[in-house]
Length: 574
Ligand code: ATP
Ligand code: MG
Image (cartoon, rainbow, N blue to C red; front, side, top):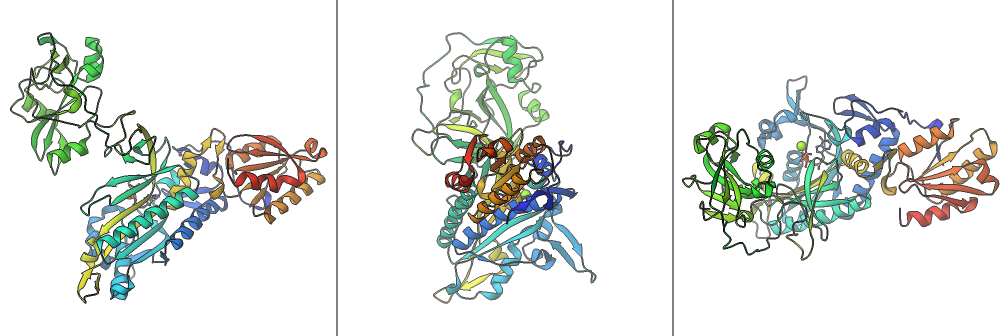
């Protein structure tokens, strides 16, 4: 049976709610999908919950297909387990803690490594039971400092969390790969444009953590992606292919020249003052690596890849030096640091500084810069390395011909090799085939269900409203009888609705007694992928209009052929 708007519950709002900063939040409120109860805590109204359930179903099907077993752990967790891993203290204020009537401490689970590890250590003895992957779809609570953006960063939110237990690191890696594949299937089935982003290369070796990111301009994370292959990385981690250029041997013809630059400190100020492009400036940065000052030089328009620099230095801590330290080191106020006369420090330079044969550098003196500076002639560089951040158009480090692009993403899922961190802390051991006790090797795998719904809106919308991918749309088809007073139109809407439902479509009928304009606006706002519009004129000719929400394409279709037309379309959705 189709659903009818007058008997459904879709409290749409005409105006933008002021508290909503991002599009998904705004549109979910306007479309009557969610309502706020407290900061970061929401009611999911029927239309919103329908999307949530669709995503959950896809997740469930794919997790089951991968051989993962669904269970359900409690949301309220005793402190004792959290104390075993020391996370009771370590987790900080994001952990919502409270006491029961007997003064025992509990928390509302933000994640479930402790609980699942406790279960498995109590129940699993032998290697024969392994590997195991458990998952649940459950409400989590994290007392985020800044809950915002609606379902994107809530405090109470629905997560699919999975935990794996293997005998060996190789086994755990296989499980990891299966989960990686599963996540790829899940987000593909959700109809989303996404990338798996290498998060870091941990101690276990190889890539031990990937974040699945939905690409959207409004995303929190800056990403670098290859336009040709699947390479994707956080901007902080991104690599580029190094192309050797013939830099050696170039030297400025002109001698070095001192110039007064009163009050000009930043690259853009100096460039504007000297009327030169920022590429001509050699930027000097002073860092403290484990508290010891080091210098790094970059072309004026580039930025330092701090992650890489830290690795190169093999430092535990890398911080940009404070103004006070810069002054102590250079004997000049900040903004006038330069490599000339700083040879008592170790000087690193980005590869591309090598080719700068007529550069501008700070003079280590208030209001002074030098012109016509050439590295290796006017100052020494201890080491040239590729140290700058990737920029648009750099070459892909993975594939042969791809170029890199900068984009933004929303992390919707995370796959992670845990190793033996939890099994060691909680003594989750098994007997190996030789009868020896070993720690289980674990992995954990999360997906934010509500965040995935929100991310889909961030990626798929226009000025009129949401555009749901068919796979996770609350309904597939919205029927709009334009004149609900005409018995013939109402009857036709019912009939088409019933036919479509029979063909497997989920149908909503806007049977409200409203003007067509109101119905059209709400239809576009809610973003159901296909609209079937019934007007008197078309109907007289035996036709209805089918509108594809995504493209705005409009097509007249003979009355009896609507299901066939939509079948054809949804087999390769617009
Ligand atoms: P973030 O860096 O965004 O805080 P996280 O690293 O804390 O995320 P995980 O602990 O890996 O996230 O949780 C797994 C998934 O749960 C995330 O990929 C995300 O989709 C979702 N998630 C995490 N925190 C929230 C939140 N506050 N609101 C909604 N979804 C969330
Ligand atoms: Mg977090």
